Length: 375
Image 1 (tube, helix red, strand yellow):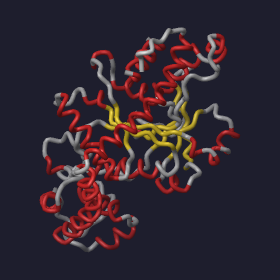
Image 2 (cartoon, one colour; image 1 turned 45 degrees about the vertical axis):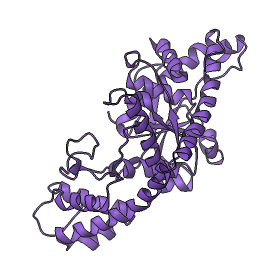
Image 3 (tube, helix red, strand yellow; image 1 turned 60 degrees about the horizontal axis):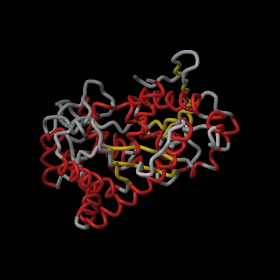
Image 4 (cartoon, helix red, strand yellow; image 1 turned 180 degrees about the vertical axis):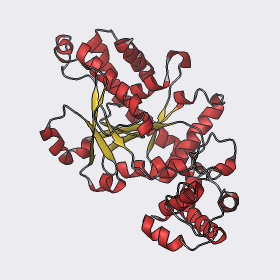
């Protein structure tokens, strides 16, 4: 309910790709600049994250950020599909785990985002719990999103903006294809701060200042883009019609072996990276590099004279070894429903507390009266 109200507020207030230079959308509107700098923390630097900071950010704030990064909040969410594949894990989940060492993180399962999925309420609840168990098994601490509202009222970019603004996020881990959504979020925050924050809010009894934090982007590191096993030019996706196109995190050993055995390859001798005429070869070598943690040069040297039969056995073993601890932990979590429900409940309580504070400020700044039943 909290996020639903905020979604309406953001709608009322204003009712692609990432460029390597300033993104400008006209006078008075938000501008983003890619500073191409790695955040000054060990864990995030190791992950390769880049931070997009506002053009107006003072140098003193930037230089002093290293001392206060642990106080910054990162917010991100996932759909409760109940199924997570290798591309999700290598492209996002491993990075989320690293972020937990540096920031206060709030990762949630957004039930409302799943309204287009072919789930009824019990199926959605099961998918939510299963998704939570998978992410927990990977080392990500999740909270639960409970929204019950008609989809016709909202659209995805506004939902994304509402999630980010409601929980007062400092940073949002995004891919380059989501930068425009984040720019919308920033514009909504700046618009609300201008219309209702500062002295206007203070005159109504508030503390004044900004109602919303204007979030900045953490661009996820390049190189973790995992492609389909049946088409090296298409991204690995849970929506692909064939299950042979992806490695699911819960696939048993024999299923992984069968998928790798049947995956698309080519006929030239030897294996190599970065040959545009050999996309499947590049993809499979990249997967092997990512799951083993080796450098590109090490993998290239190891595999340059291998044939496909030999390499597929090596890749299968590497995938099984990578996923076995996750699968074992998942089995432990899913076998203990009380523990899983407590994790979801604790996360929801923490999120509700943050949301309540934001909503109280919004009601006050806009001069709305609150009923005690509103949460």
